[in-house]
Image (cartoon, rainbow over all chains, first blue to last red):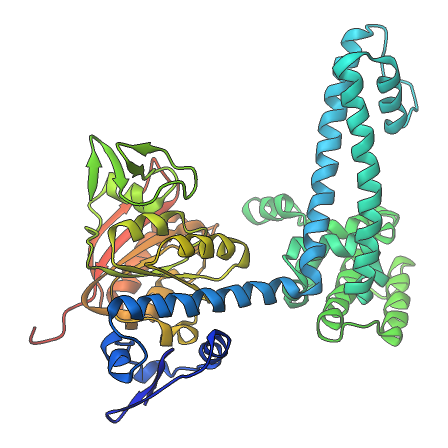
Amino acid sequence: MQSYWFGDVGEGRCSMVTGDANAMVSHIRALSTRMDEFIPADWQQAVTCGACSDRADYLARLQAVCIAAAERSVREHYAGKDAELLQMVRTLDEIDTVINLLSERAADWYMVRHPAFSRKYRRTPAHILVRTMREKSRGALGMVAGEIGQLADTRTALAKEVSARANDVMPNTSALIGGLVAARLMAHAGGLLPLSRLPASAIQVLGARTALFAHLKTHSPSPKHGIIFQHRRVHNAPRDIRGRVARVLAGKLAIAARLDYFRGVAAPEFLLEAQERIDAAGKGGGA
Amino acid sequence: MIWIGDVLVSRGEGGVYNERMLGGARIWEPYRSKLAALYHVGKGVELEPSLRVLYLGAANGTTVSHVADYTEVVYAVEFAPRPMQDLIEVARRRRNVIPIMADATRPETYAPLVEAVDLVYQDVAQPDQAAIAIRNSVFLKPGGYLVLMLKTRSVDVRKDPALVFDETIAALKDAGFIVQESVWLAPYHQDHAAIVCTKPPKPGE
């Protein structure tokens, strides 16, 4: 017997699938086929079966079911808690890029208007510089500086949201490395499921693609860390043990990501043990 | 295939992706579509109104829409949700596009939906592209065509594209395909090749 979207066919008999569009979608998604004895569908069988009247009707009905099924699949995919977090992180990183680009450009412009101005030997933070430019510039330059300020505010708000969402969606990973960096790891992997499937060694160098391929192609040293460098435990560690801290941290992150995907809630005893282990690596123990 | 001068076009409802029009027909850009590039650098497979097509790696439905202009029906398989949203929109406007959200490496998940086809067109960014084509050849009628757009960089970025090309052709031949044409798609697409094969007719036909 062969199962098709419109019904089951075998030994000269045919039983048609009945029900509304929803039922049809559930039916085709539940079908499983043994490929070794599979025979492709034949529209004339569907006509004999009573599922449709002619070729055009066959295609029209099949298309309707397939569109409904695809829509349901898309909806389910986006229903995952990580889907929106992914977009939030990517937007955040994009805003950072835009702010940097625009600030550089605006500063260059400002220096043309104020030939005596230089940023050398000043410890003015970027946002103060932007404010100065806004207040002291007429016309479009002042507006551009204003926009940069607005974007910076948006960025701050978004970063808070990302952090909070990450704490909720990936509690274990976030507890180890902070919500923002956890969310970035997830975004780089392409979602929580792909992240949970990565080996620790891949998590360790996630975001260090250029360095990794330079290492594989030439004989340059392998990267010690990618995104996880952003965590204070890694970048604050002395240079000579940074690689070890990154490796141990990545190992625990791989476990944490799996807990997040499959369990979805914080595992206090794991976190306690993991924090101790990572601290030990930072103090020179546990190589 | 329809050519207006040296411009490849297809006849159908325009405005799918803001494509340019020429004499009421949709311009099919070789720099955007690998299949269009194949018609520019090689022979390809003549698309006809009677053809049934299984399209693996349908993406946003850009090339799909052109193939659908030429053929009877296109079974468009795509795995990723974002392009699938666009593909569904294309299907709503073209009654001969059947969108299927499934993984081309697992034909058993969409087998009950697909009929026997005259052409399997494959453009997937996967490492095992020959294996995917072979697994999907159950849908291909004897004597039918397989057009495989080989993304050599997806097979192995570190391997020489020419080597990947030769290995893929060897794998297809081992599986019983008869290779009709194999060309690189330069200058339109870098490190991409097109391999056109036929499935042998049943003995005695």
